[in-house]
Length: 598
Image (tube, rainbow, N blue to C red; front, side, top):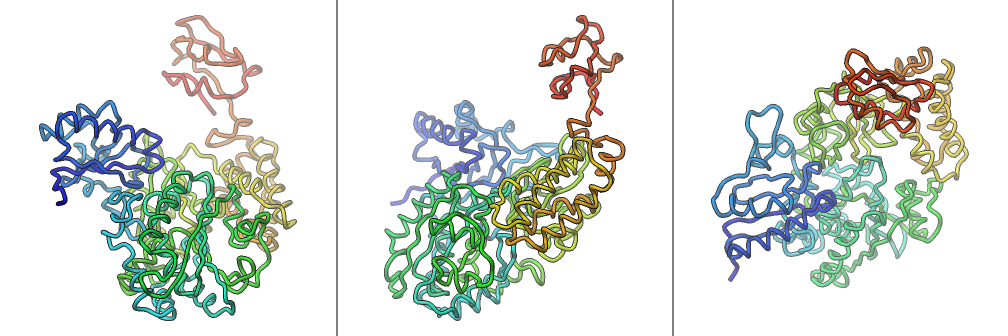
């Protein structure tokens, strides 16, 4: 007979929480619960990513739905005594909002959670990713059963087309149409691939889904395999995701054991098996043809298209490649119907989108919102706004291939059409928020430096053009730029967009063009005034000490690696500009605001 527990404690075991000690906290909880004889009353379980990544370790206590954050092993004895024995809520570990007078206990009342609609993340913080039975209990594999036992391949494809699902990997191509092309292609052998080679700076959407709900991806691939006539699938996942790999391997093993992978699945007569392929971390392998070359054992380099992978892909066979988030949506579309899914989002951008919200925002984490949600709502209602009283400056959307969106466009709906109009892309879902301390020229330089290093070098426009862009941006941030450099940036960007072989080179200029479009005055300040308005670019910064504010505590002098600061104790200090290397340690460590950075 199944036990009836009084309390269920669900502990986040995503990468962020694990690194912050959530598993140690779980073990301490189990030990303390047993010590107090509560093992028959309290269940302790682990889940995948809870979403609220910056506040880990995280735990939700059911049935009260109380959300606890930053709860570590040393807090466990007090927690057990107060909450489990005396029935008192621990205020110290509740969520605190700057707008709320008191801490918020229940997860449903926290804006970060209540403002989201979950589809791809429907099992967030509810199931153990290593337990297939918990996935099945939440309607898992019912979509696959329906597809295999009740639908033809054509019906599956038509349902996907009717849903309006567009690829969540960045390009936004209609998923059903891609499947239709591959299904119609001639070939006895076809391949179903999952792109889990997430490489954008600030992106962790795919990683979290794989760690939290790996069976949703497997189920999506099974349905896709039936639709296109494929009996073999590969998940291309980067080797830097060890926890995701471990959970995927467990999920594949469990699915095989349950007869959900392999021969004659559910007695349907359909066969498919799925294996992992570990990528070595090359950003360019996120491009579909480079990814396929990598699986073949070749160097990951894009090839010209056409022919497109739907006709000639992996080992020159018809192939479909979908990303993790796209696949996680598919089981629910088939099980609940295209009409349900298409009721979410906008007319041309259906459903929801998962974003990794990071940067200068209070609530860093993984979120899911309907397509068409305004940027302002995402950053302020879910993200909690900008910390430390600073002003919002821009949000980088779409990773290195995206653009920077300024404050006056915060009411823009986030969908494929509107975001492109303002010079960015939805991309795979990286969303990096920047405040007034960010230099937009340096932001452009950072992303161009990243893509320059990640270019495979196959085509000349990308190989040489990215370097030229980077050199010009470096020159500007060093105070050596000329006004003609702005024209050169725009000219080079145009060449890269039109002449590069693959999407990496074609989109490298996006951060440059968007910052020039909305923050040209910062470029001009760097060039004409030899000044960085945000005081970020080291060559253009000057540090000094205000004698009226300096208390002579000597901390800045002790931290200075070049001994550029001198002065007697309790007397104002001075900074020798000839010795200063502009490391900023004096500014970072001064407790009285006496060190000035301009």
